[in-house]
Image (tube, rainbow over all chains, first blue to last red):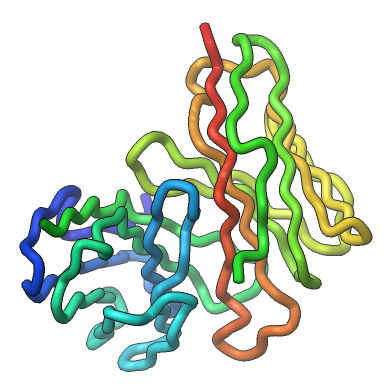
Length: 113
Length: 116
């Protein structure tokens, strides 16, 4: 059974804190993605990675960075969390081919107070 | 900018009825996918239709694609209470190349409520 796991389901952090969200997949996928989901805005791509140590900016990379040191793990980093980063964060992975589905993790609901 | 836009934003039907959701997009695509999300959870892939296909079936799901109108529809027949969820369309973009080819752009979703 294929699996994408995320380190936390719920997370509460204070403004200014450094936040790490981790995603691990066991499907040997080259591509991994971080999205944020907000009511009325749908899913928006923050960053994606197509190989170890490779990353590409998505539509809303400002305020975020990522790390991909191992193929199975993709981390999203909020250098200095702000209240407007309160959101649901979703990680996904897929093979590097067209016409393939993305497999999603369960999501991390982050609240920044 | 966001490609897919679902319509309606919310839909409420009785169990046993059919549910139809629509998706419109802006630029040429290779594929269009539909995903489902139960409340507060991750997305699950339902079905993929390629740009050279017009219709595809999977169980109680029927997807159509009209590339001339840049639109797709998802039909769920004989709905059940367990179909209550949000449904998203996602498109790639023919214009992207290399690693960018694998990006999907998601719409804002249709929230379906099936009343027992």
